[in-house]
Length: 67
Image 1 (tube, one colour):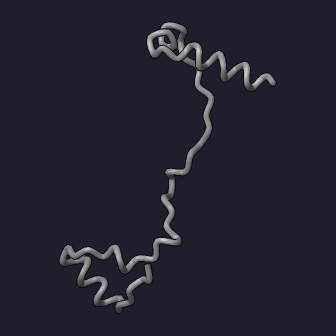
Image 2 (image 1 turned 135 degrees about the horizontal axis):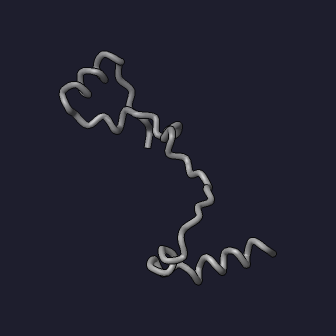
């Protein structure tokens, strides 16, 4: 879809009045700062792993990483 074009003043007025400005934004360059995925390692107590029911999946992941 072709992006609509308006002046900055008109854009500000529409925004301030609560109108939908979605069609006036360039969606090709959107990013969400501080929401990028980050891999972390976490140690859980055994009781918590059992309670969450993820022990088998964790074991499979460990085996996969050893290969």
